[in-house]
Image 1 (spheres, rainbow, N blue to C red):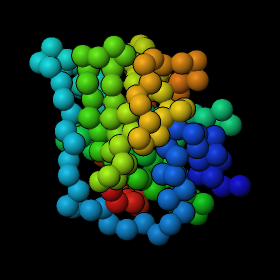
Image 2: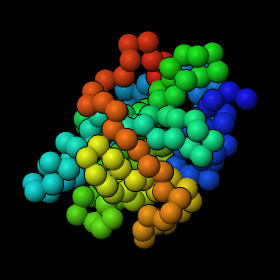
Image 3: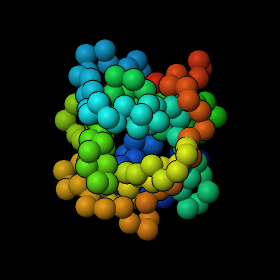
Image 4: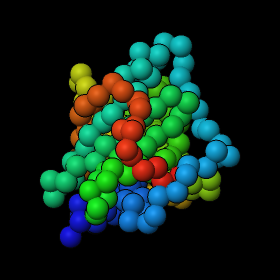
Length: 169
């Protein structure tokens, strides 16, 4: 079974449901007409905002890993290796409410589907994000649970690898 299918099965009940499956499709150009959902941050949260930008690697229980790339202007990419070994990145949009406890993260999967979830920065270069149980149209969880996915910040760069194939928004 390919890495993407294993990751997809492990987190099928969460935010990444269906996204990783689309990595098996032919990559196309990202849509230039997609609306940008910008980050929202109060002035005193700019440090948290900067901490979020970059590449965050998460691992599902099967041991397979994937990377979220939080980029400027509310862009978010889910990066993983395709069955052919090529790096693919699914383009999404995100918006954050840093004032909420836990912090809110809205992920635009498409022009019509948004997933509402919660996250917390738990230490230097560490984050917990509630993926399980989140889907478009479902209410935002009130809190993180013991099945929240743990991420480690692996890079400050917000650029994708030059050879990454982007699956549009």
